[in-house]
Image: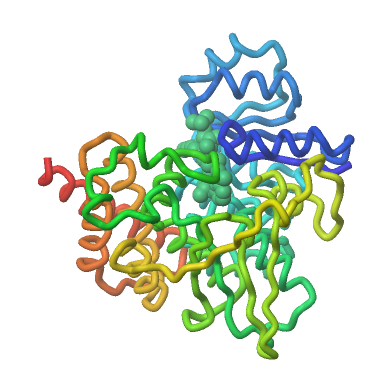
Length: 385
Ligand SMILES: NC(=O)c1ccc[n+]([C@@H]2O[C@H](COP(=O)([O-])OP(=O)(O)OC[C@H]3O[C@@H](n4cnc5c(N)ncnc54)[C@H](OP(=O)(O)O)[C@@H]3O)[C@@H](O)[C@H]2O)c1
């Protein structure tokens, strides 16, 4: 039995992880949970899984949690330090990192530094701090196993391959709800329409990122750090069926792919059980019913945020931090209806255009650039009101 901790337990990935763990016949014991503000769901999870340590985002929610939960964990902590404490809890063996955005960075780094297996869903932490996470993993011996379905596919394809044999890694993208629309048709699409993803049910931030395709841009940078690949070895294809989760082209001309149902429980389970596989209870893929697997190049004029992500990938680390920070704020502003869909790109483009070269080598450097970009972006969003 392995001790499992879930960071972001009340989210889409967090809930699926707990479901996977519960279906694995006592292979996992939940020892830690960290969540944000959904106290009702966190209390239900705590009653059911009885963790030893638990983190809330805010101290003021402690009373509400105690009222809602008859089970008392040995330790309750809070705030960013609390989530990091749960991540580094000494009895952890596997930590699923599924807090959204840069808020996931410190807890993810804490789990990696402690040497645990880290099943990584929080792509933003790789985007802004991939170099730090990989350095920490090299020091501590932690395994970082991707949960993102595309990176899980690449990881599975590369399991027995040599790095020098890789010609190109091609991440697939569903294209999101607006794949067939022109930029003019997309411009005023509402958050409700953007949240209506054709293939995946996910948290709001990643769903909007899928509609703009910034999600794929972030995933390119994530792949760069996860698999140690340069810009020229990374590509994207739109694959509306979301059956082929990514492809790897090898130097002998072979192309490797991983195919499965569109269900995050599969890559989550793989990250937990790797290198073993176990029954998922999910139906097999029936390709004779699917018939068509289509692939299209990405039109960078239709999805200009992908172009910005490629630019950030080619430049110094500060540009990836800026890309992520401006995008997080722009998505929030769009969800609050302060800006329209097309302006998400404008906000991120402005942030990158005004970003100067800054040396980013430490966690403090990352947060310094993140703070500056957020400050500039907030001012810019104010001016748009
Ligand atoms: N969903 C997917 O299918 C999918 C696929 C691939 C990768 N990912 C990545 O996985 C991560 C999670 O995505 P998701 O869809 O599961 O998001 P989500 O449904 O929005 O869940 C986010 C989780 O993070 C918690 N959280 C947010 N801010 C926090 C903070 N400051 N401190 C502590 N906890 C905090 C939330 O808590 P409360 O809800 O309690 O506030 C929730 O548990 C993202 O980085 C996303 O890009 C998701």
